[in-house]
View (cartoon, rainbow, N blue to C red):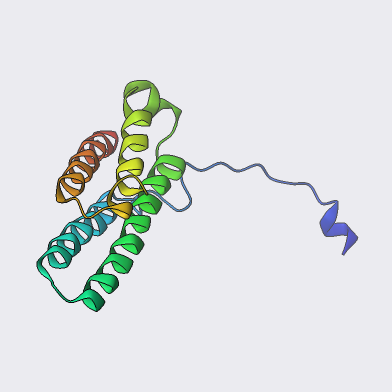
Length: 132
């Protein structure tokens, strides 16, 4: 047992958690599209129970949008990406806020959902540029 604790270590490094190809901004976009659709359904309904369920699901999906954006930001994008695309930090921050409590998570505003989708598209454009 002690021999394993004191055994020589090997230094390894990786660009991301797994071999590249597992990250995709489409995950955030799918959840954001779901948020937008839920907002429309909630606003079209007069059933308070349905609206309550819709709001709960919308908040969960908004949280998933934030999660997928953070994964891209923390696990995929690296310093060279931020150097080449200096607006990337701001884009991710703005998109995350649009999915948060002051955005789609906390409102039924379809315009905010559209703004979120537009920010995700900007992030996706940069993402795909980095894959070339």
